[in-house]
Image (tube, rainbow, N blue to C red; front, side, top):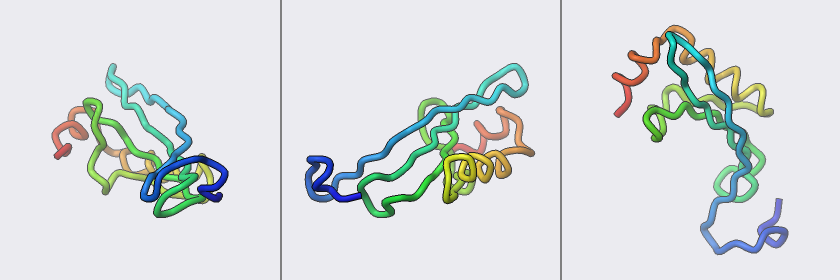
Length: 91
């Protein structure tokens, strides 16, 4: 998509976002799935777990050609972790 379609400044990033929440161990993990409209990788999806209102380590981020593929990739990377483990690995 062109930055002409969205009035932004040079160097801006514009993402469309969807939020998911997975309940595990009586706690929840929020996963933010982004679709890049304008930025370094326009047209790509990424899924990022949020830990204490901040991004989890990038090793747990998912990527894909669709929202669902990025979410699945992220879930596969955190599947083996408890919420406490994910919190402890947060930098």
